[in-house]
Image (cartoon, rainbow, N blue to C red; front, side):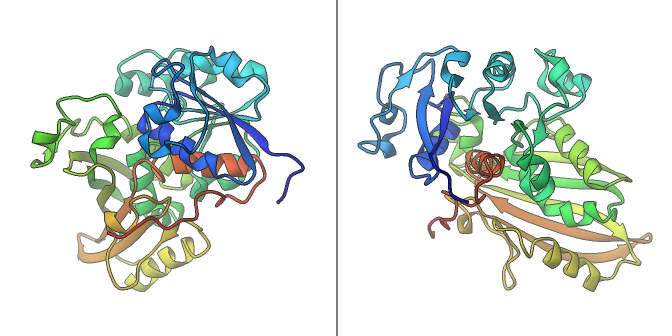
Length: 352
């Protein structure tokens, strides 16, 4: 759908990896103009100071602005701020009337106790919990279209949910989903740490936050809202020697009476009209096939029947910075603004 003028957007927290990807995508968006980029880092410097790939692409500079000033006159604000920081900025942005897409975890949950347990802090404004629409288009497309405020899902949460969503929406899940998810170092953010230090990361595999990752309650809450009932989640994240990308392997269980043909048909039908979900026919999902793109690949391998339940191995792969972050936020932004949701996101990435 065309518009008589371009929508105006601001990015707050634009110096990180996710912020850089948002900026890159918005700079060639046909219907949205990126007007401001706010950050407490690189103030006064061109955006290329943090994002060298944008050298010479734009004259925008990082500005040290209060959230209300960055949002003033904007149609939409995309928040690339850390957890526990974004929530403090939201009330003043709401007061300006701008739409919000928040990439932090601050408004993905409806339960303040779950937030406190997994994010290890009291929520800064618990009265707003439950007021944001969860920004997974494959689950909440129509709600996102009508939303003023969207909480964009976490990277692991997106990967795992899309892997099992056809089972969840049909109420087929039974018992415990056991998931191992491997992720690239960019998921830890732009600030260097022991976990992202190249000499050890590049030759290593290790688990972290075992059974305690903050995306766990988000996954459980929204799969239940999707229709899943009798299930739980055990999630083990693994630090992988990649810059970007996630591969999740989820061992789910369904009643033995549900045939392999029904399961395969469920996946094919569920994702047949989704613009960014691919179900490969002759190979399994892989990170290199989606890296640099907003696409996600999903596949299933059917296992044995034991104790009246069939094991379904659900495989899913995406780019944590795009479909797991900035790209998905833009996809939701497009829906909120009444635009084609694929705008600035349709490129397939590169190979290898």
